[in-house]
Image 1 (cartoon, one colour):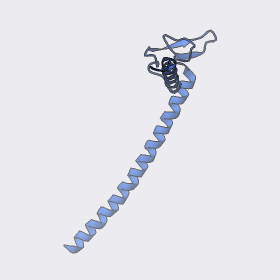
Image 2: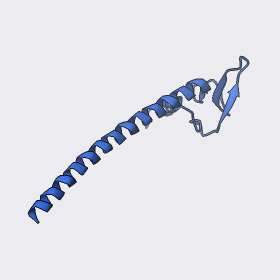
Image 3: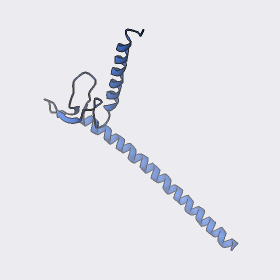
Image 4: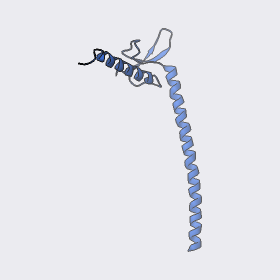
Amino acid sequence: MTDPYYADIKQWKRDSDRRELVLYAHHCIPKTCACGAPIRVFIDEKGKSYFECTEFEDDGFHIRHGCFNAFEEELEELNEKVAEEAKSQKKMVDEMKKMREDFKLLKELCMEGG
């Protein structure tokens, strides 16, 4: 016989997992809600814009994320990517300079030996 609270525990676990999914979905511009519904732009009475699930209910399972915050987070991530690409490009330029010096040295060695 199974534990009588087993079904309740499983439901609590599913709810917890969904809340965690929604929590991490509140980063940058969301594509779809954790429930699978599409996201729309919603403007409240005060004129503040949100990215919101079309099935939004204030139960913690649906996404409602401020547009300004989402744009700010997207820009921060893009700035980090640009900085990373610039660092990578600088590293490649340095490696190419070293390779040119090595080729020049090899060419000189070949000319001396020939």
